[in-house]
Image 1: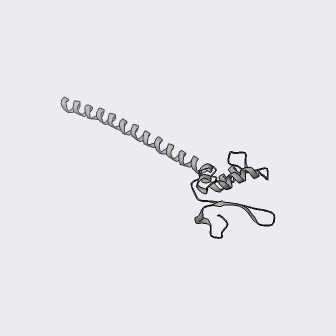
Image 2: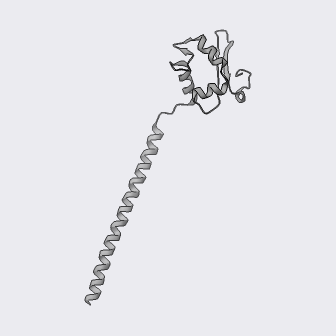
Length: 126
């Protein structure tokens, strides 16, 4: 009888230990899931700027590649960008997607155009 009681106590102790391990694992998994949910939620709430907004910001603010500041176009910088290839201009802007950028004068005449040939359906981005 004593051996059975001893065996029963040992079994109970093992069950307590194994239950504690399961609880630790469960706790770790719950914390990991919460961390992932918080991470995804934070990324979803970040303001997303499109590459178009990024390009506009780069060419109109005071950056090394900008040719317009406060509505005034720097003709020397514009000429420098005109002489660049599209791929060099794209690399200097650090954008992934193709784009087309053009500037018109007050009469609607295009004075500057640069962009991907894939987007040049109307003959503007040459």
